[in-house]
Image 1 (cartoon, helix red, strand yellow):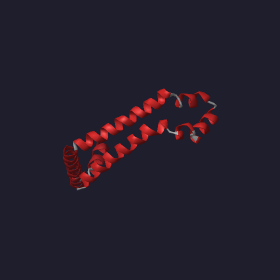
Image 2 (cartoon, rainbow, N blue to C red):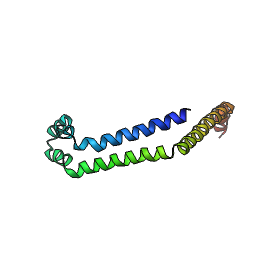
Image 3 (cartoon, rainbow, N blue to C red):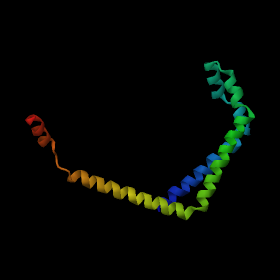
Length: 121
């Protein structure tokens, strides 16, 4: 069950971020960005504002949004496989954690033996 919830949350995050990246560059929020003007004022880099307001950067951000939406749709299409892979990975991870904890508890303390060997030399 936790694997299904994790995959669903991942799909929703991909879709939400993708839609935000698609729409935000073409909205008034992109043009009236307080932080952008604050940073460019502090750095005295007016070229940075012009660069970020250009159509090329807006298109690149929109393309990243499209990739996010496609990743979310791909994960939704392969939902059962994703859940199965995540469940097996989660199971292997917990099994390896138990093994390493058991191995660590089985190890004995060899500090005295190494101290006595070094004092002999």
